[in-house]
Amino acid sequence: MSETLTLDGLHVVHAPAPTAPGTGNHGGRPPLLLVHGAGHGAWCWELWQERLPGLGWESYALSLRNHPGSRAVERQTFLERLRVEDYADDVATVARHIARPCVVVGHSMGGIVVQRFAARYGAEGGALAGLVLLASVGPGQLGPLRPAPLPTDQPYTLSREVAAERYFHTARPDVRERALERLVPESPAVMNQSTVGAGVPIAPEEIACPVLVVTAGHDRSVAPRDGRIADYYGGQWLHDAEDGHDVMLEGGWAALLARILAWADAQAGRA
Figure 1 (cartoon, rainbow, N blue to C red):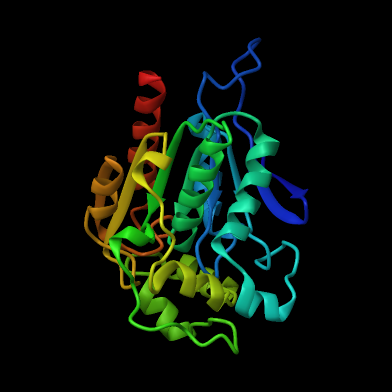
Figure 2: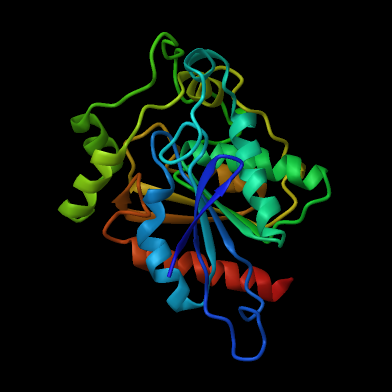
């Protein structure tokens, strides 16, 4: 049974895993910290969070600031001054609450957020069990993803039709429609920082934990669909050929989740 937490004004959904009788632990498995992408919120992980406890995994899904359930940001700051580093602060808030090495999962824009978080967290002496990047933006060293910046006089918003085409390919109609109803505007300042010009530079050696990169064959966003991010970090590449950008909501979400958990279990075994 999941519970809702509020941490420094951030909406967090915690789905605990059953503990082994008499042990008070979860078989040594690290918790998952789930970070959404542009315009999404903690809600986008609900299929995963319904399934994970029965598989023996604990998870935390947060809504970044100015996303569903979390604290608002002043309009001009949201449009012009918000940065990936601010969102990484939000991830750090939840990681401090968890207070155990976790597997951090970032989707799309959230992927570059968790890369920045992981680099900074490691530099501060924090330890992560793994980093999973789903249909993710890559570090600035791999080049820009947009030819020109988005306007900053209004929030970045997709029409329902464009969002449906860009994010989905195999999702059940009810899942897709529910998601489309819950999308919110994104900060153009963050979008520009992460996809235009120099992007968000991160050196490979700054990421001290194992990395898994997941790409989607029917992804129609600007996220790469090849293994370049995995190659850059010396990580593992997993290509989901059948699904679209929102892989955690697509028709193959359960099979993909099983493969990600198998990877996470393997990393824990090596540790």
